[in-house]
Length: 230
Ligand code: CA
Image (cartoon, rainbow, N blue to C red):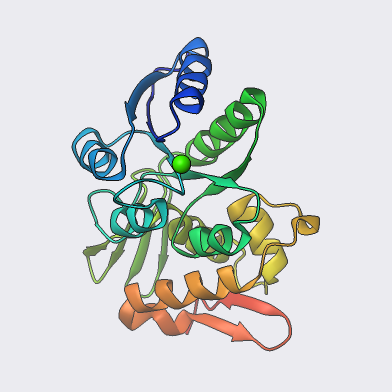
């Protein structure tokens, strides 16, 4: 049985209870918060394996929480599934740009949410052991889920990490934005998520890996490739 701890931040009590019940039935340990500020505090303190985050919350909203967590090196690795209501499409895209891993639109079935939770957690686990990818001064340690540039650790969000790993493992092949959305975000192309989500993350990734940022090459009308020899 799964033992990972999942934190739910949701102010609607019936949804909170429903999600909690279903996660516990799957064997997860569950922590809850009914407001944004309490939720943020718990996320920082408990560092859950995954966060289920409602978008509309009193005091501190879901997007803000997502931004704060993803911009902090202690919490940026925590995967986030956002809960959004119908008609919040813009926020949905914004959430993904801020580093959320997935989203579920209300009303949803517990079965659907559990499937997403498992998929997000599984994506983290699917890494081969003991592999170190190197390019110039950049090192990507697949075992420890760590990046170093000039031997110094670089703190990436889970999506930035997956994006970099996917690009490096393509060994110089050009990958389209749609392919990256599918590989990194797990989206079907018919989902119609904006490809600028990919561009945003590429931009942040380049900034974070500093002197090695030039290796991520934009290929006009095609996508991106990682230059191993540049
Ligand atoms: Ca709400």
